[in-house]
Length: 91
Image 1 (tube, rainbow, N blue to C red):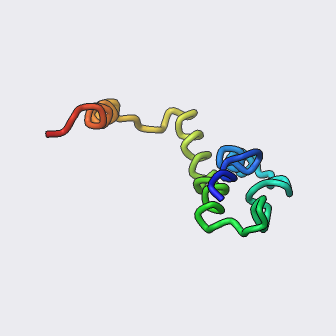
Image 2: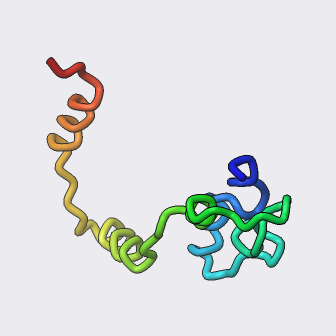
């Protein structure tokens, strides 16, 4: 059920941290269980929420390397405009 999503080591943040470190989730985690606390199998939505967002560690590594080497272009004007667009009411 919904109250079981994100509890303990099965939360999306913990799962993402495990995925980034290359480790697997502990066997007692939400994503490792076949059924919920009440014996009912979790819904597909609950399983997806427990797994967290997909993370492309290769892409993250490439971006980190580009930033470290000074080869990652940042368009400050475009970033500022997007921030203003999000903050200002649209007519």
